[in-house]
Image 1 (cartoon, rainbow, N blue to C red):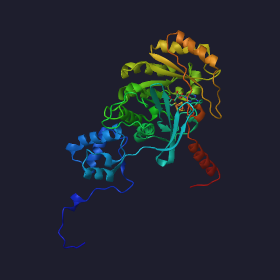
Image 2 (spheres, protein in one colour):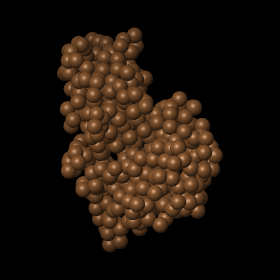
Image 3 (tube, rainbow, N blue to C red):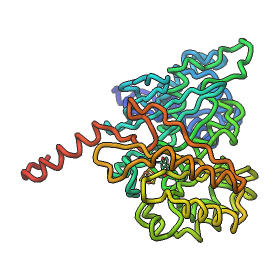
Image 4 (spheres, rainbow, N blue to C red):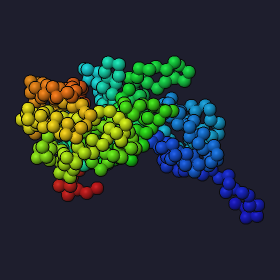
Length: 396
Ligand code: SAH
Ligand code: SF4
């Protein structure tokens, strides 16, 4: 550089371009976070809210992943966005389709980890079962995921990204100008995949807020169900900050049995849990709580269990529906599924007491997509290889 050259105000014009690979993902940001990120990039504060609204709609309403498609933004601004940001969702590694139409996706997320996502088509609706963690810290003895250690929490981007991935696969992004189709292939979300959603509260909340946003995917909070094993301290927050429907993995009617099946019960026992559940419908302005009850032969499926279950619910005056889940077996599982007759008898006692007691139809069993069967094979393979290497004294 010529030392005599006049000093110009170069500082102002040097593009603050992050190095390649350091681009931030816009997916998963709350509206406020996106606004801040745009300001940091140099968007004037006065415009930032409007720009956020525009970009938000492109991403979540129209499903666009390329800034070049955002035609209501100036070309130079689109180029600037492209230099600073990406719009990224988990990558689909495999997709299996069951005889009954259930689809199971294996998705790759950062770090080479994998999560499973299941789409269940039904008459006039379709439910996407999404994951909140890779693995789980809890060790429910009947759950396949529970045999896999927690690898990590998913980010908000990875959680909402599962919904976006499924919409891609179902080809369900609306086309601007086309008439609105009211019957949606993906009409419901259940947080019933891998992991305990209330142990990843903030990311689950932010992702579900995005799913509910009126200028995006637009799913009503009544079409989102969060299932928890009973993380009592977070139940009130779920009502206040998410407001979706709640399902509880109840599974046993005495503390003695629940301590074994759902070990978090040793921390928060049945009474404590029921009190938190009783407060939920009012706090979230929602209807019934779904009690999930997996039917394990000779463990939790007696007539006495059915009566005790009703007692618990009545004593706490909880508006409830009881979803009976035939146990889905997995290799090495220490339990057997209750017989159909036993399940029907159990359901009948509950029904006679005045509660809905649907028996969950097993879906996608042929592709190991049913409840509690999710666990990425590759994750397990990777883990055992690491274990073998550790035993052999190999360090990397
Ligand atoms: N961690 C959360 C959500 C994921 S589990 C929770 O425990 O609620 C989703 C549902 O599948 C839970 O009700 C869980 O108890 C149930 N489940 C787990 N393993 C199962 C199996 N092998 N057969 C049937 N249901 C199972
Ligand atoms: Fe985790 Fe839920 Fe499985 Fe329990 S049932 S191990 S909380 S995923």
